[in-house]
Image (cartoon, rainbow, N blue to C red):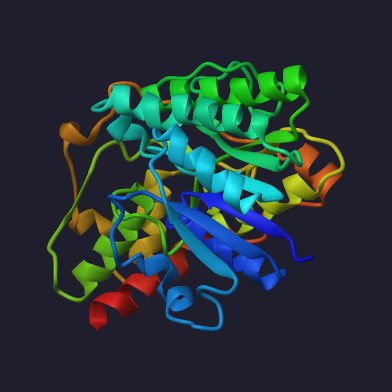
Length: 327
């Protein structure tokens, strides 16, 4: 019997790449889609439009993460062997504006899902997409699986709660439940409200004469930025491991917002200083510092490591924007 997986957040950046990865490995994939999701679902359109895949290997189910009855019904019907929980309010800056709904969609929804999984027959394996934001302003650099949580945003707090609950359910109820503590990961499919995509798109638009400037907040903010396709591979490897454990997925390298600006504008042959304007309205009330991960455990136990360089990633994203805007 072919492997069967269920993904929450299937229409997002990570969900779309994970779907492709699993289908390529012969899985049947079921995805949970919010009723308010866009009908176009552009990241998976090439799969939805393929009659050999959609309705045969790929299926969608409508449910909101706060609808326990519908979630329970879907999981009982599908009976997945693997569950990848990727859904939630994932924008850190926005979490300061909508902290209650962030906690509901990110923290409470994970607990709700764990409760449902606890009652399922067959003990499906569960991957929870945690985040480096749980570390916030960490006491050690780089961070690993043993680094204490110290979140600096409502999103970080919600993820810290969800991550710890996964650990509790693993220890108390014997669930095969794992956390992947992923650092920032990007791709041409990144949402336009994330700074990496915003910069790459603006560089392309300015080059084509469609825009005149790029407005940003803190150019000195640093993160550990990697390729989303590397990270979804880590998600799959986590559930293939013999025991349920938590893993940090990161490149182990610092880069600043200014580094993204420099790389994107260099790709289009422009001097960014002529087009960048800073605006304090884009500054966060609290900015995490020194977030860089140590993926040694993932490399040792899973054979995982990042394969795409920072410069290659930003180059690909910028060229993708040029192509899209030129159409």
